[in-house]
Length: 590
Image 1 (cartoon, rainbow, N blue to C red):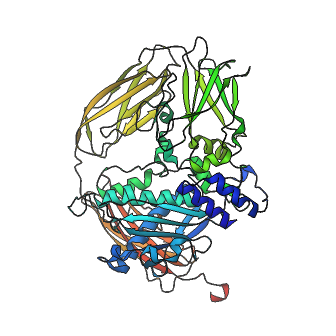
Image 2: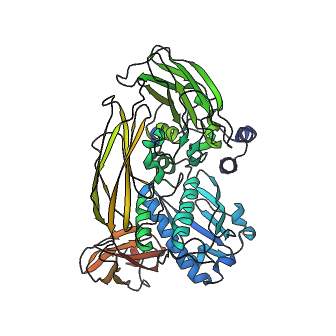
Image 3: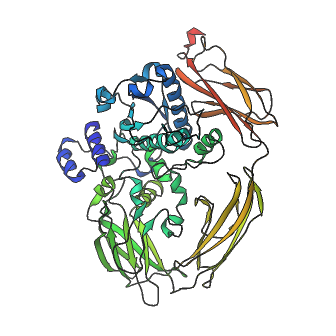
């Protein structure tokens, strides 16, 4: 059902009235044979051709050959993440896959002439001084997509990023590439493979408008938000946010940023599923009907069920509107309350997947918890649960803050890890401390804990006096903060290594035949590692000379080969070349 799937995906991305669209299209499709739940996340690896349609303004100053070289590195960086996190990867040959043309004049940007398995990226110039935008429509099988409305300030050189600010460029090339372009490309490509329906960022901030105790706003940036406290790792997924921050120098920061990005398990399950027999938006088999969603209300200390507990459920309708009540009742003898979302599977396509649940019981403090699309995909795609379940433990009334302290060294050095030891105790005891979080000067979490021991390691990224804070929150929501100042010294070594990459002539190379890669490198202190990275995947990383390894191309076409030298202080130098690999030799050719 590629035509149906593409329209449904378009409805998902543009916020159209999906139930109406589905009602119109359903008679056109035959009843499919659904795959088993255990097939989720078990697709075979696949390689997808990326085709760029770039507005002439973006290539005017650098020319098409240089634009192609830089975009090849973009694709290599995308592969670094996708090959590590999923079974999907990408190819890009500038000679065939780059067209310098206004996206509006390119039929593929309108999904015309896009072959199965291809992904089209349509990029125009930004008029805002920074890169922005991005919309995607796709079919589910084979994964085929078009991402348009990408607006860029420039085609950057990922290996030559700068932190400089100029009147013509109010944001650095480092921030524009790592924090905007790369993040957006990853976000949209995740959509192509079926992840992020309803947009994960709809769960970033939702106000509690119920006027029912306890007040419980959903706020990712609020350090005492208990929903996001246990889900800090989800922030690393580009579907939700960006891991970009100015750490180290731009070259090392690119490496660090690529290393920090992680897809959630629910995202991986979506991307790594073969939807051939199971169109994602054509069935509630994958995301089961929402008619039997259950709330489990228990005693926090013992886990015992709380029967007869009044329960209320609200849903976020989006667009900043007040929460709308959808269910109210009491738990049964097993402490369960079952309700219907009253919008079925379409909730997941239009982002109506954020629920607020509140409950109360005699002798217990009233409680509240949120349920988002993250929980839905984790429960169904990863855990294989038969029904959605929302747990809400209720504790005893408590208004006393926990006691908290932080032990930190007085001195530290940029790039060198140091130990931090927060301590937190609560008057309620072991069930009192909900979590401990260590936060740096930039307000980004360094470590997040839900149970002791709380010791963590922090690597300073900038010199000067750094304030490190520790926040402890108990099960009742009472919070306390302690802090420590650390004087951070600049590293003694700030000079990056020098390197030279040697790639033999590829004229006689072919897929399946080994190629010897070699390099030379030097540093004023010493080279710690020299990594050979082909199309975003590390082939080898020798730590001492001779720096050489064998690479066997797996497919014909263009390969991006990056050499990355790192010294002991974390300074990074990179260079890259492109090499063309011939078709695989037949036995009679040998």
